[in-house]
Length: 419
Image (tube, rainbow, N blue to C red; front, side, top):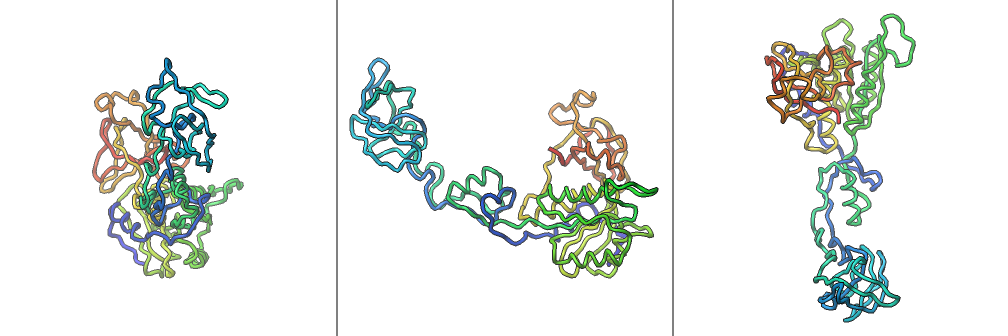
């Protein structure tokens, strides 16, 4: 287990985290299970879309020449030769002087080249009076106007949403190849941790990290296996990690990575040559561990303070999980925001400050930059790594470069971590 005192920058450690990740193998799923997966192969159409000319309106399929002079004053009477509901396979020929009653989506019959909406007609028993002229092609959806054979419908690498699933279904594809979701084991460590709801003895605290990280894995599109809390027994933890190696796609631990006497994760991974523990120039989240177990499973060893765990997951683990899912864009949405309250920053380290968005009226500082959203620290405690109860107020993470002071009115880059 290499341990170094040479400090990495935030970007260096992020790059090392991403280097552990690659798109997972593909599986074939049916359309009911496709939502939220990342497409692994292009979907193209073998047919024109629409497949045939069809009506854009409920009304009558006509020959445009027959209704060229139709108006309210001089309606044209046509003989109705057929009824064509959507899905009809009928192909009646519309001869001069005739029309076919037609519903939206039904194929336009041979001979017809326009559709008259029902509101421009007066229907009789076997005839229809047309009170408006229509040009050739009016209210007709042409075959192939949406796509032609060979067109790309949904590209590989697309995160499938409802519209993508509909597009795949529209070309008659019932199954798609997608990247498998990463299976992630989440382990919180520490003798002081107990399951929420348990009566606490003096010195004990409820385990929140395993719930935090498991939820974060699921929000990132992974499948979480929550295994915390685990006590400060290096041998037991080592056995657990080796048992998981090769059976999951990643392991995320929290706690036991610093320089204390009971750093169980460091002790458990003492003999792993491909796992490194390194300080990172970021606050919170300085102590970090990273690497692969002998079976190749990536392990992300995060600090145990809850805000540190949350920030570390966002910066280092989430992007790697998104890459495993097959995504190329692994970034959170960012925005430039005006700070309405200044704060102190640590020397030599980037700072990640949980923030919430506020109305510009909350401070006079906003009058100069009305086009930007405004933020304040999520809590008065700022980026204190233990402030988990107030973490729920955070809507974004302000990224402050090293050796940069933040004053009211300054602009900062904010990762949006809440809708």
